[in-house]
Length: 86
Image (cartoon, rainbow, N blue to C red; front, side, top):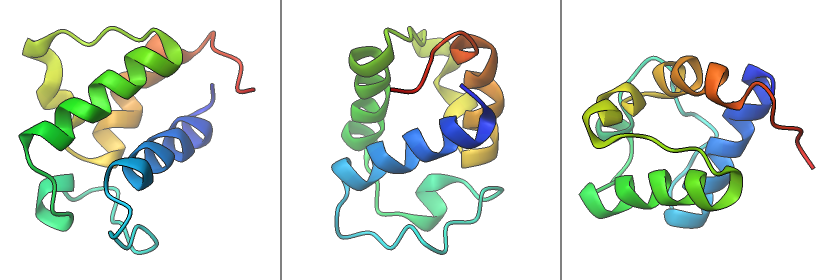
């Protein structure tokens, strides 16, 4: 997947987890928790959805890499480079 496709996938997951959030004005450089009303369970849901949808394993000690959209895309890009968006 390309960085743009990964970003779209994360937006899709965020929309499923928090459908009332306005994701149109999401700033990729600001932490999700500073922009969205996500609690720790919502954050775990993001990790679980990535695992369920794409078999991407994210060790707990690396969760900090998923703080913002830009850090999430940068972290996931090498893990998802061989995944073809269906």
